Image (cartoon, rainbow, N blue to C red; front, side):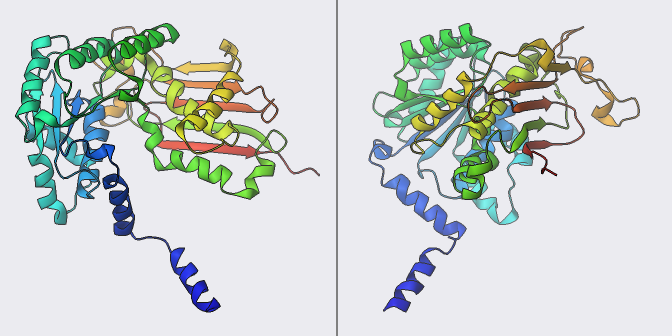
Length: 387
């Protein structure tokens, strides 16, 4: 009997296959009562013509649809100012969707669920047209609606107001996903929070930093707290410094007009890198619930002293005369960038977490565009061995 039980235990610890993992996820999703408040779901991508939509959102929706992780009656509606078609969106997204030949039929089914509406973000009539289209979809009158705002913060106010007054589902639930950057500074962030809370309940609002969905970032907590070997050495006694790096090998690629409003610090450092710093430096949360993890992150951020100019290096990339193609172009060569702009495309900052665990350990944040390689890395440099 003992040997049989042991064999069963071993079987239960075997890694699951991809299909078994997806099977478990489907069961969890479809056992959720709230999830079935309506059988029809509509995912609306606001800013469907943008870089984030084609590189991240549409490919992710495709992977979820391909693997059966979305309800079968899910429809996708793109909305933007550009005069586009679904075929044009498909062409723009294909380089990022990693489709193999055997998935052609499933891909066709995915895009058959897609539609696109062109309109102005400040125009109520455009959102009335969008709502009419949503109602015309099969089961649209009672569908759950999820609005993903892949947009610059400058239009958040108008878009959310028009969604609230023109496009809310009256029978299903509604969700608003707001992408980073969440305002330009503390004042604009607080104004945006106040504006959203005047239109929606807190459970309807999701503030998203898409970088936290990366496998490396999600594994940081498991790496730290799931390995006892790191517990005694994850502190100022053993760690000399922590370096967090985010490097991209390409420039603004025609997005300079958007990028110039924010710069590399607001685009990458203030959100992506600070989130990773928090995961590296925080204490073990009481549980893995979002509230408990958030509380520990906040404790870390409260311990960070304000930066001084002596702890920061800024830069802007220029063209390489000996390079090829885009490598010859500097930041100011992008026609969408204002002439004479001094906006930073590279930044390094040294932060210190003033608490018992990390006092005196420099956390070095580095990020930039048009650099020598693509890299996202967290590096802990341990102290030298004595003697």
